Image (cartoon, rainbow, N blue to C red; front, side, top):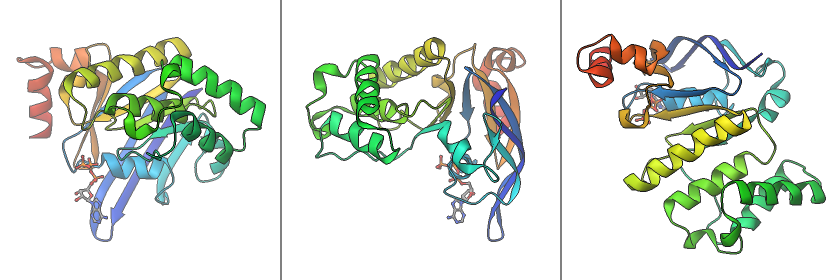
Length: 238
Ligand SMILES: Nc1ncnc2c1ncn2[C@@H]1O[C@H](COP(=O)(O)OP(=O)(O)OP(=O)(O)O)[C@@H](O)[C@H]1O
């Protein structure tokens, strides 16, 4: 079963069309980069996937559950890291995780076990009692990812997760998420407008003006154009 299926999804802000006939499938445990220039429709798509906006056109299924018909089951399989951080800066790393576990209704002991596991997995153990305010951008993102995985989703959405990070932290985060995907079998949808975050082996979706205009291995797309992926992306989004 796929981690995510989108079929003919559309969305408009009043008369302004933001998404048209968007369709794609993400296999379980796969890493997919969703690349699009500013205004392509990435945030709108994330808002539909997280049910911030109502889906009126098309179908979205998370692990086979329709977002419209079985939203609770669909969302139980979804973890999200939003573009804007939603951590409480004045709570510690551990308190932020505990708060989220409570929101998801995880009983105390299970919450503690999962928190320990995520702290370890994200190498955050030594920082557990630090207020989030004291962490650098890369570590804050790790806390958000740890938090998003507490309820054991099968699909993790990261919306421009590397925005605002310095190059070394960006690279570290990118590597970390790929490792999670490989080792834990969580499917990842990584949205970005930065081409250098895409690797040749990635599944690549290119969104432009609300439409998916490419869906292929990054290496295959790059091979189709002299100048590689950068030239292909430029041509596609021109
Ligand atoms: N609240 C809104 N009202 C009207 N139009 C909107 C609204 N939000 C977005 N749009 C338009 O919808 C289109 C898609 O925007 P969206 O924010 O989803 O793109 P994006 O790829 O996330 O861009 P960015 O990387 O700049 O956030 C754009 O043309 C944008 O101007």
